[in-house]
Image 1 (tube, rainbow, N blue to C red):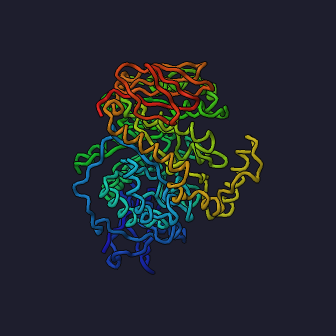
Image 2 (image 1 turned 90 degrees about the vertical axis):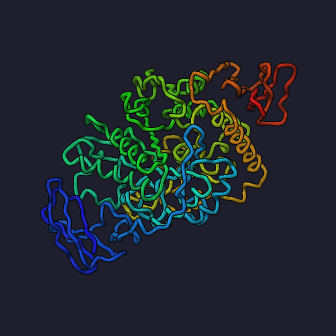
Image 3 (image 1 turned 180 degrees about the vertical axis):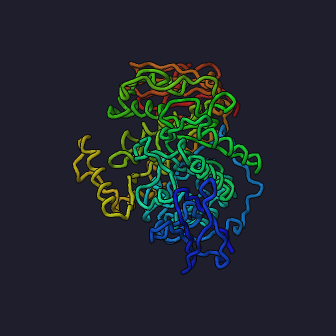
Length: 580
């Protein structure tokens, strides 16, 4: 026997179909919930809901298992049946973390949880502490980035389904790796999203780039918020996930007295106390608003950390000239220095790209509240040809960028393959199933990049399987020429960061930066460690402070003599006075 429940506040009649039989449900209660106990529903039973006079049978909005795709019936799943082996597991704190963003489908040739498990020992050897999985909630088709999820409680079957994710997390924990999962609560995918049939999950009162906004403040919003909070708690409780990365929280429109993020962070904190586990929430935000990561007691939302886009933009525009879009606001050494010491380049300053003032000053927050990177799925995949940093700026500059990221005061994040300068692109790909939607995506991608001078033939078709296959990592590269050189560099940088007291200091007041706009050199003082960078066209002669020694250099031809060091163009040197 199983008791079925579903929220459908606007329906007059609701039935659940189990096997060949329809069972009328009782309801709605005052909140809009329907329920019925079905004796014939055994373990692994397939089921779906019928609403009013609509003859269709829809999957459960809270379905834990969609073995036959997002349009098919749901299947009962017992979370208690899996045998875990991580009872004593505790994730490392953010202050000593190295994140690694992973897309399951392209990380290995098979593109599954089980095949990814075979590469976990490699990640441990590199020095990674946290794997950040791009979304794995069920979405239409058998390939995609995952940001078009429609069954948010179910794990995509082509990755290995719910048991596959549990095996993966269990294997990660056995090796000392934490797992953070990317979740999308700001919209649903355009194909296979049947939640609107059941209730007001979306509202036409607000618009987002994906259409109607999620209903976080209107009628019925209590249950919508409950839907997302329960989803977050499920990943952490039932799948033993160590944290969530919240996609594009700037798309939330919520004027409630208690903001959705505040509610979510409070509930996750309560779960962490109950489980005696370290759980984290990390947001992606375009707002440059430090309130997102301020503690709730200080008037913030209580999110643990957020991605630092300004740091990426400031660094990237020094490595490569690109003035389109938001890059128009960046391009100076001063801005990179500010991102390293003040976090937001735009903290109330005027933005040419936005045509208005943007952001707010960061005060009294640790740098460990922010995640720094030079590559991620957006910054690579949203380029027309998915080209990676090393392919754009060359090996020397890519090594300099890695050195800056991994010695910066933020929590560092790497994108899969970055550590060995992968030759494969990471392209935008999808499998929307609906022919009209697939055509619209393909044509939209061509139109988007035509303005940048790309011919249609140069834009890979996102709906073509070949686009997806081209994005798969080639693991044989890790022992080949420049790829092996880059991998050695990343391993050395990560080892130094994890062993250094100064490089794990999150107090922004302890980071000092000197720079020359004309010479394009930069000196980052982290206390016991100094990072010297030359992005200019001429050698830069910089001082070596007394007691400091060279511990890492991006090239072998860097000369240090009598208290000075001569940096050739596109090089980086790390000095230290720490023991060891």
